[in-house]
Length: 74
Length: 183
Image 1 (cartoon, rainbow over the protein chains, first blue to last red):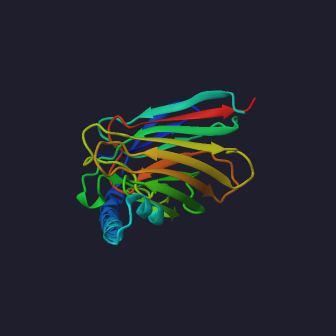
Image 2 (cartoon, chains in turn brown, green):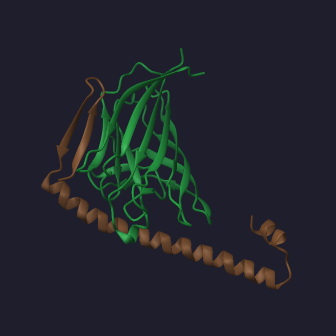
């Protein structure tokens, strides 16, 4: 059973509080929503990296040096 | 210039994991607060990558949180603005990270290092803070971020809580809260 850790700084006592059934049910729903959101974000990052690599390849084909490409893309 | 660090409290997560970690009844006698953490998530969802976003609350508040994040992952540098997230327990937290801390897909026993600095936490001003973290590991893609945060609330900070967007803090995750005095 997952718990919440609560540290009382005035006493130094740490208490483990068990999650309620409602909290457990809600976290399942939230986890799925997060997974979907994260997959979308990672796809966007991958597309950005792919576009950058494609641009570098095209610039190289035009005869630019690696330093010149780096200067353009930085 | 700060000249003293005093450990207020430290906590280590036990074998059952912890959905959230909260420091309450924080003494109001210091100038600044520092929280040092070594954190890992139990999440195994491949859809989230090898990390999970994490969030925070001051005084159990669910509003007033914004951050500006600078992030690198080994190939792409980017920036973002974060506000809130729905944590795996407890509802709305201020979102700290764009990426996040190591989870169970990122290798055995690998923890993320975080360092949070909160100056003037008892002042009657909005609370600014900074945090840096490194998602550890030897893989090609690993995230690090430096973050400037703001809690738009003038109340003195008396509690700090952390939670993940999914999963629990894994066993052996730890957090230590320090107070700093300027005299």
